[in-house]
Image 1 (cartoon, rainbow, N blue to C red):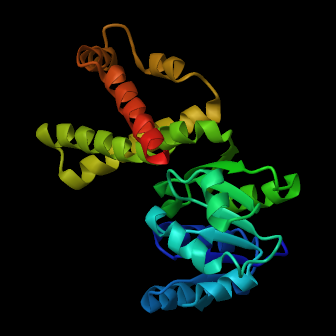
Image 2: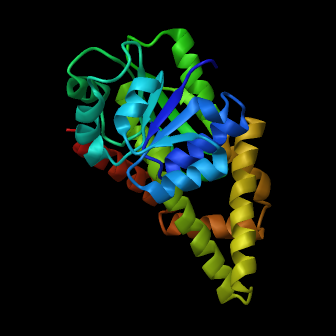
Length: 268
């Protein structure tokens, strides 16, 4: 990729993206410029990755061909007001804030501009993100491929219709929190039955990780994979029955639908 990539904001998600891009050698560190008011954060990014840094967002705006707005959603109006008259004519703006529709971003810039709305998730921090990508009509197929390659450098990415972004927020954006709760609960049960805490977390987390990998790599239906573990009158089917007695699947469905609805409310 022969482009300058700019980041406005260098929090956890921004740093995860920078690390993924550099590790994948999509561009050189000197082809990345990071803007942030926090000089300590900038110094850490520069030391760790060798990128260019600045405390002036307009330097990023004037320099970058692709700008990732990796700041909190409430700061978008402030940041965009700063840079909207400074960005290159053919710049691609990448937004990663929940609840920020493409149309709303265009309105803040006050003109038609290339916008790609993306919803990554926190496993980006360990190179295992799931990112949903939605470009507006001004972004070419080649440009979309470039954006996809950025997000695939630290996980997996899929192009989705914008109307599904609220569903994405639930099924991949918020769901890591639910998975962490599941791991914690499994570990608590193991501790209750005598296993040391640290060991319990390792067993529970690896079981979840390995199970997810089986779904992704075998292509088999999760129910089919579940049946593989359930021997007649065995230990696993006993546990499955207990989960069903406590409406396990209904609780999960309800949690994700509540999350989707909240995302819809925030987008209005």
